[in-house]
Length: 469
Image (tube, rainbow, N blue to C red; front, side, top):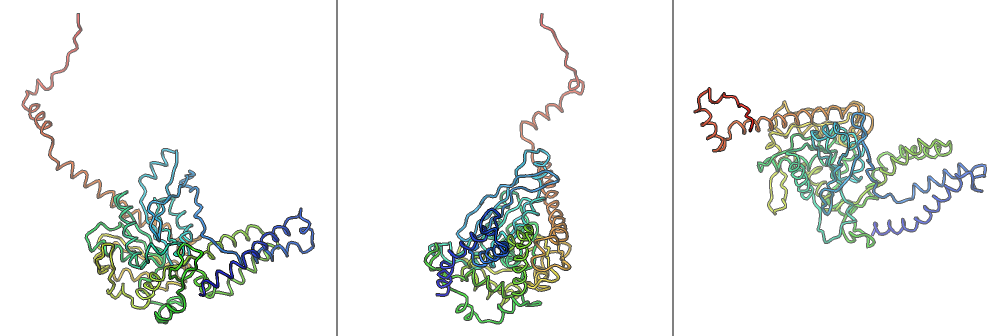
């Protein structure tokens, strides 16, 4: 009922927000009669702010058209490689007519970025993707708003998430021989489970895993976000945050954790900061500071766009990650696509290098939560493990902004390249060994034996040119 009431209220407000947008433009235009009023700029700013506070925020686009690679502007083509009911695997294919650049791109590592399914869209990692594209072939999981998925597609659980990740890893491995996996925040847990299951089955696992600001062990340094998930009962979540999608959407009737409720929770964490930010935006509009105003718009276009999550997935995550701590306790069983239940054993991972990244001031995933991956992946040699703590960085600072680009990315790039080089060296060695041990064809052996049986002088006899009369 709450979801339906929210949608009705939003529909009623929509004409007024559209009118506010038009009024803002009229008062801001100096050629308009309304733009001649003494306080027109202030009135325009007020209407603009009213429009942005009331409008509906749709999914943003990645919008990565080009990337600079060593001074060469390379075109980027975004395409969907695999389309699943609840997720699309997107590839950012780089195109160039510069031969030297193409040669360089061909040999770069392939990286699967697993984006969080915890409210915001995968476009939140736009800066992450654009930076990684300089030195890597990049794929990303783009999760679908659950209210757009028809009920006929079934439910989506945390186990389904794990199975999706395995399928995506195999897809990239099949294309390039192997790959590297980067998970940001929430997906660190299902990604580790996916790789663990692959290792237990004897499948090839990724060359490396980069785990950034995620709740591998949410019991360590719990934050306000963790405490909410830990201290409320499952019944409380069922009754207070789960609602059915209204009839106007394709996923009508699906039980979800609605995006508007999630957004309310995000804002409630730091209400004074958001109030100050909107007031600064209002002042920037009055001053005519278009650059600062545009920065505000871009941030909140992303921040205010929040998707619905399937109830099964959300409740599974609360129970598995934040209440029962199944991963670190070794009590997690996952239902595979073949209907078989498999036990998650991180200690079975042997050949995948581990890099964990935490922000010193992270208020979402507390200190030590991500680093816990090194404790439970006991099968990985210590020489293949590394941890980074980013000084002065909060949660978003480890994958977006100046600290990400200048402090975090260079270390990730070096780490990935180190294990990509090992793959290249191993492949070259295997090829040389195969060539050395492969028996020569019978015709070649016969010719070699005949050549060896001839006298040395006969073999060395030069050809004499003759002229026809």
